[in-house]
Image (cartoon, rainbow, N blue to C red; front, top):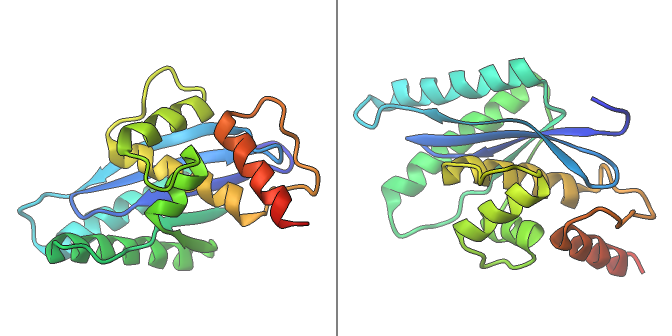
Length: 190
C-alpha cells in the first residue's frame, strides 16, 4: 500500500450470502480494488454452523488483506423478521471479528452508502453496482449484488470518515459522484 492510503474492508451482512470487499483509497479519493467475494453458508444448516462459516470467511479476508478499518451495513427494521435477524447476526459477527483483530469498525445505513456512491440515497442495486464499477475502474459490474454492496460500504466509509480527506481535496480524475461528495464536504466546512 502506498503512503496515505486507507485499506477498508466492507461487509454486507447476510446469513446465506455475506458480501466482503476490500479497497485501498488514496487521499485524493481514488480507489483500487483489492478483493471482492461472498462468504456463503448453507441455508439448511444449523444457525451456529452458519454463523461459524460466516466468521471463518471474514477472518480469512482480515488475515489475508490486513484492513485498517471495517465498515458494515447498519441493520435496520424490515418487514421480514427472519431476514433482519440473520442480517443482524452476521453484522454482529463482523463487528466481533473487528474487535478481536484490533480493527476499528463503523456502521453505515443503506441510504448513506447509496448517497455516497451515487449521489442519491434511494438508488437501486444496479445503479450502485454501476457506480462501484466506475469508481474502481472495473471492466464488469461486481456480482453478486452482495459483493457490490460490500465494496460500496468500503468506499462510503473511506469517503465519509475523513481519515483520508485533506483540507483541500483534489477533484481532478474523480467520478461525478466523487466530485459531488467532495463539493458537499467542502461546503459543510465553511
